[in-house]
Amino acid sequence: IRNFALIENLNIEFSKGLNIMTGETGAGKSIIIDSVNFVLGERSSKDVISTGYEKTEVSAVFDWIDSPEFKDEMQYYGIGTDDVLILSREMNIQGRSICRVNGKLVTTSILKSIGNYLIDIHGQHEHQSLLDERRHIGILDLFGGNELINIKDKVREAYEEIKAIKSKLKNIVGDDYDRESKLGFLNYQIQEIDNAKLKPGEEEDLIKQKTILNNSEKLYSVLSSCYSLLYESSENISPVYDSLGRVLTQLKSICGIDDRINAVANSLENAYFTVEGAVEDIREYKEKIDFNPELINEVESRLDMINRLKMKYGKDTGEILKYRDKIYKEAEDIKNSDEIIDKLKKQIDQKSALLYDLSQKLSNLRKSIAKKLEKNIMDELKFLRMDKTKFEVYFDVLKKNGQVDFSENGIDIVYFLISANPGEPLKPLSKIASGGESSRIMLAIKTVMADADKIPCLIFDEIDTGISGKAAQAVAEKLGQISKSHQVICVTHLPQIASMADTHFYISKNVNEGKTRTKVEKLERSGQIKEIARMFGGAKITELTLRNAEEMLTMANELKTKKAV
View 1 (cartoon, one colour):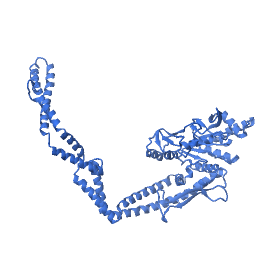
View 2 (tube, one colour; view 1 turned 90 degrees about the vertical axis):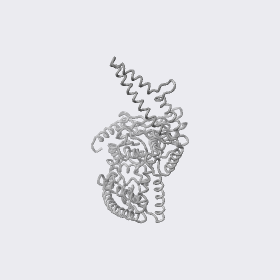
View 3 (cartoon, one colour; view 1 turned 180 degrees about the vertical axis):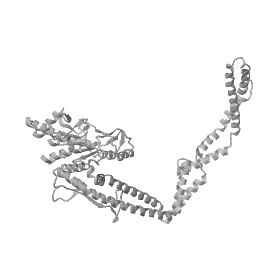
View 4 (cartoon, helix red, strand yellow; view 1 turned 135 degrees about the vertical axis):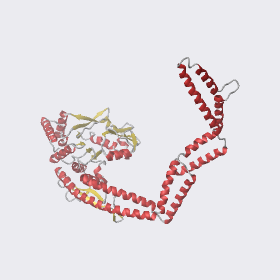
């Protein structure tokens, strides 16, 4: 974190398990959470830039998430897989942001989309997946396990098949004028391509032929010179072919004297016959050179015609011919459209009946699973001393123009509703006023969903607001429990919660040269004891508070080693 509010330059490495941040009010604990929100692409103003600096920068390093959905997301954005994932964002004094993922420039919206897979932040923050009602149906389905997911996959498959058939039907169906007009246009294109009598690779051959024709005089001149040098006599100069023959005759006359000369003679004889073949090839090529300007015009005219077709139908003759086959099939479909339309409509009816049956089965199973989810979450809320809180999974039917409609999720609309106090109506999670209350409800849901929840890191900023005593101890135990399957980062003012830390950070601020700066210290056990004692007794730490703090840490460690936590 660089030049972010009170933080000038800070590196924090959070561990696995439960990471606790404590410190005096105003020391900068929430600033650290704000910096996480910043690097996850949340809205932010230039006011976060430290006074006197031109820009701020935050980077976050994550272990790679081994999930097909996340891999698909990264591939969609063109970001390669790696052992780690590095998110970074900087903002200048004009309020402009530069965002990167593994070094690749991305928009803040892409950064936020990727961040949704990595961290859930609970408190007075926007980055809470559970507040997004569109995600509730997915959370319920995850809780339902493999049986529900298997039916959901079949629903999605049927839905996508119907969608594809409807798309095909839409392309065919239209009024008679539209169909006739489109058929006429397709026939015109087919005829234009057919009249050209194209061949695959023809353009390349024509380009080569044009090059040869444009250089015919040069070819003839150079080849004539080569032919003369190799084969024709001129004044005082013997051709190469005759000279090689004379040399070969002389060598053969002495081969009997020394066998080593045989090898030289054989090599020269091969060269002699090679030259003889080359002379014949040059002569034949010369005789076939065409100086006809009309042929050049024909080739250029043919290339111009191919270029015009390329502008309309494809990058080369092969692509043009593929396009011709495609539109020919479209034209045939239009000619037989009535028959095809009837066939497609029957397919839609069959698939829709299947989709309806599967969606009903999925909906019934969801409602059964929802009762179990409600009970489990209510049990967790009771454990967290929120006995009066009610939780309900609300179902509605997806409709369009008054009729039951379908999505890839079936026919269900699912919302999680909460009533935090007796007499209050059930309302959406996003309408819960208290950040602490909201965080504890989220903790209950996350505890129930621990095995199915795929987001690896949870941050709780205000989870201890308005609680103490047994409620605080219950929250501490649940944080310890959920940290077994997730990395958890928690800001707290309560010693009961702080004592459960696997890693404890103390946040303080100091003034240097008139500037207030946030400092982070990773505490060892002795430091933990002192900090928890401070949380017990305030600024004055006594032997009693130190003993109480040490006892609380010991009890917390014993609790963490039990199987239940």
